[in-house]
Length: 291
Image (cartoon, rainbow, N blue to C red; front, top):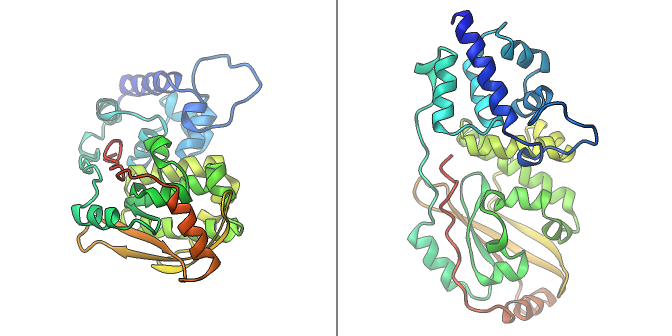
């Protein structure tokens, strides 16, 4: 790569970061005035998990970016396909640009039928990186109105860390959150190059110190059943059995169902809770899941 390419790459990176705001990238705001529009160099470096010095030298054309660094910058700067292709061309690594576009996640018909037939038990369909793909009315009554959650945030781990209602319903939040992080680690092992997973992990790493600490522990968890304890704002404490069934194909979709022991206080509370729900189909999440 010659000096002209170096200069164009630096100018392109500056232009891309000028178009972003800290809030759009999940970064905390600052009280100090910004001399230039958009993200600062240190903020881009933080999002890309590289040193500020390295990123500065990259913008100044004093170092050549490796393929992993380019991939990290694509995620940090939220580049679309055309911008990504241009970045790799400027860096002289066109042949190394990822080309495989992941198909959108869609709920399998069999999963949909099972979900629709579960009327008294809260149930959700979880996809790759624990995205919430579909749910039944009982799950809405227990957790939250998933339909009102932006699709980019409709993720089990993200809700557990960032949604105050979902977080408050876990009396032993630290244990449950650590288990969720460990389950997400298993997802990372299945598809370490998934850009959607990288965005999720990057955002939570920046925003939440607990997630950052637990993610660094590399703990894994593939448990498909267990007991969950909830504190619901309407019906009080619930002790529910959680069972998860994986789909028979390679979609990595799982049906998570919550039930209570018949005759128990939790069973009675769950019946009361589900009796308040109205008929509504689970919503298929199909947008923004192919990246």
